[in-house]
Length: 236
Length: 83
Image 1 (cartoon, rainbow over the protein chains, first blue to last red):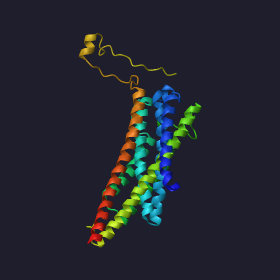
Image 2: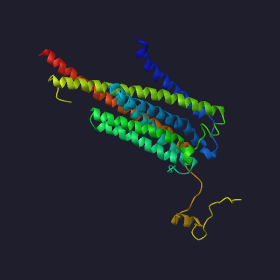
Image 3: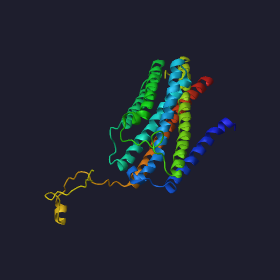
Image 4: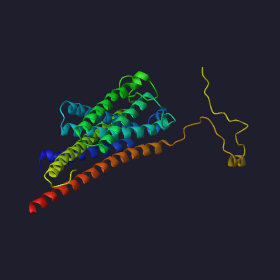
């Protein structure tokens, strides 16, 4: 087996090991936070924030690939754009599910129309619309270009999500980054860094898998069209 | 200096005896958050894994569809080769 063939199983195994270590570390080692932050429910943070980061990463891939497709259309750019949007929806759903459950304990409600929550919901809905559009419309150049424009729009919204707390305030905590108090306990910091590592590995794995799937689909579609011209198959 | 507000029972509407409690439910404003942090944390982690599993399942199903289309193409090519 070549190194290229081994790279994906190695990536998969590394991701699984990091996740396994992270979960046991969060459960058994990381201390509970103060009651105002949600107490034990604050441990959701170690997956919630890295999921949001993975959403940004997937969005960035979607943005670069969409721009690449608009500049020079190719199956490769389109596949990565599609994969970026699909992964952004998956990670966005993780953030939107874990956040309200933590908020219920920390704020007393599942949802408020806080600037960050609202802008994040908008971003995820844009990516979801893009994924649904790609699933139910054709795979022509016009559809791909429209999807690329949509992908760029979805990612342009991400910096607004990130800076919404600083710009407009709201309930959402700002522990990490400028203006935040940080994580007091060293184990809390280790858990967060491990969370970032685990979600980065997972995002890379899912992005590669989905992009390859989209590329295979595009190649197969081209072969089917060729076979239909030759009279081997009915038009796909 | 602000005075801490605590939920004050309304003497006219709060049940006083066990019989009252069994026969009437009274709406109250505020009160402490009672949802268990443990159950919220478990729900969040299970939900996130469920989303991931659904995503992997959808990818697997899409791969199955591609395999079926590929098989169809191979069969058509083999049929042509025989004739």
